[in-house]
Structures are given as C-alpha cells and as structure tokens.
Image 1 (cartoon, rainbow, N blue to C red):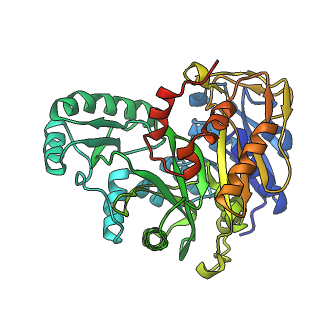
Image 2 (cartoon, rainbow, N blue to C red):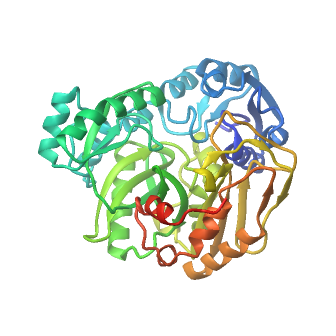
Image 3 (cartoon, helix red, strand yellow):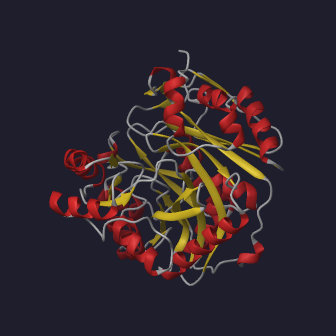
Length: 453
C-alpha cells in the first residue's frame, strides 16, 4: 500500500529527520507533541501536530494509548517510532498493527523476539552467529546467577534482558560482587524497561564495539557494512565511525555475513542493527544484541553508502521490496559522527536545559548537521540531552578527522553548554587519531584529562 500520512511518534532531531524524509517521498506527516514541545523544530516542519499529553515522557511519548489515539484521530495510516521511547515496544507495535495502521519497522513478533536479549542470543547461536559464553537464557534468582557465573568464569557482565542504552548493566569480578550487583541491575532494568529480567555474559575488558547495519523487507535482507562505536561514557555512545578503523577485511566480511544470516533467520523488516564485541587481540567477534529500530548513528552509514535509511524504511513499510542487492552497496570513504548533547562536560556531564540564543552551523563539502536546533528554541529538561549530530565524510579517515576538526571549530551553540569541547579535546588525542580505543577507554581518559570549566 502507498502510505499517505505518517504519525511521527517521537521528538527532537530524529523527528526532524523523519518529517524531511517523508516530505521527499510526497507523504504528509503529523508530529506528536507534548506540552513542552509545541514549538520544536519538527512541529514547525510537519504538516500538522497532535498533542499527546504533559511534558513528562511517561505521560506523553511513552503513553501507548495516547500515541495511538492521536495517530488515529489525525487520520494517519502509518506510525514511525524513531529511536528510544516506544520504538522497541512490542506491545505498541502490536497495537498499531491491530488498529489497521502500518508500523514503520519490524513486526511486533520480531521486536519481542529480538528485544529480549537472552532470546536474541539463542536465536543468534541457532543462526551460526558467534556469541559470548553466558547463561542459557535468563537467570532466575541469585542461586541460578551464581551457577551460571561459575560456569562462565569471572569477571561476568550482568545485563538486562529487555531494553538497551546501557541500562541494567553491571560487571561482577567475584561471587560476592555478583550477589551485591544482581539486585541493583534488576532494579534498574525494572525501572527503565518495566522488566527486571537479567542474563549473564563473559566480560571482555578491552573489547571494541562494532555493529552492522542491516536492511530487510521481511523476505530478504542485506547488510550496509559496519560502524565503530567504541568511544562511550557509561555505555552511552558519544562518537561513531564507518567503516571501523583497522578492521581486517576477513573479519569485516565474516561479521557482516553473520548479521545477514540472523536478519534473514528472523524475517527482518526495515532498518536494524546487530551489535558485536570485537576482540582486536584475537580477531574474534561476538554478537551481543540487536536493535530493532533506526539507530542514532545511522548517518555515518548513509554517508559511506549514499543511501537514505529513513526513506528506505518508509518504502519497505509501504510494501516495496528491497531495491538493492548486496552487490549494489559498496562503501566509499570514511564518515565520523559526534553527538552534540546539552551537557556540561566540565562539570560531570551535567544536563543543561535552557534556550538556544544563537546558532552557527558548519558547512562545506562533506559536512552534515542533523539537529533539532534553531535560534530561540527551548531545550526542555524532561528528555534525553541530545541536540544533534555533527557528521563529516571524506575520502580517508585522516581527511575525515581534519574535516571534523574544521567543522567543530565552526559550530557554535549559544545559550546552553554542549559536549562540543569534549570532541575537540578527543581530536587531539593520539589514540583517537589512531583508532586505538575500546569501550572502556573514554572513561579512563576522562579521569586523567579533566575538561576545564
């Protein structure tokens, strides 16, 4: 079916991204707005807006009934959930489907299967995708956790079975630590996802985070190559690249082929990402989870492939088959994305809501700024602090780093502090310039490289 009117069930920069992609396809959009977001950029760009509740997300963007009601009452025939909020909520996807609307993403069954990380691990193993040694599914109670940890060997990572974004994760170096950390992780997971279920995996101390972008139509799937996302603080990504620096061609081919096997095995529809830990010392990689949605870092894949992933999602949701075969997707050059958050990095990354009083956006060849910003816009205190993403592309990684340095020098967001100074400092570090980082590198770097207030 040809989609006519899409309900944008999100906010911020990803909502802007969806509205723009839909307009290019000739599809109207209705933007969900909380009481705090009536003047946000996506609301200004959409064809219409639909109030969905008070400022707090639990009473608006996370209210499944309110979102579906607004989508139906505004005459929409499809819902795009973006990332975060309800994007990986199988119940919401099911409600959309049962209401006769199109959910722009995978089916509710796929979201449920892959959204439970323990189930996803089993399915990955069945598809021949390498996984870290860990528990067989969820661990129910301390006794089961102790037994699983003893079999895996310490240290172990305690992980939430539902959700993502680094929530509900702890590292236990001993049985005593495990006893103390299991209740903490369960409580955090329950608060974040409404599900306190946990599973265990072997902990890899200096692993790189490498992920593969896939695109499927429910019948076939292809990969769009990999991204590196190892620069993280508290398991939250701050800097992403494509392709992954220094990845051996044989490892790249094996990694991407494994992602396609799993995507095909689950009949994946839309854009999705399979995340892996890569052990540079051994060349081994291990599947950790699948994100059944568009990712924050999708622009670096778009920059090296020339594709618009959001448009492809919309086309597939409207019933079109994949327009590309695997051989049609050839990567070119190197892209880097840095997240610009409303946070004061010099003061412990304290969130910094406020009003943007001035804005200078970098330009020139190979520079892209996906953002929710305009002079005078409000940055509410109720939501994630992401303001936008500065993305650069060039023919080589060295040239992309130089372009990023130039673009960061041009970027100016006045009125609220941002994380741009962090990225300027990271650009000066030899390890970052060499691509010699791992998932715990940034936190250690911050301890010895405090940013000046």
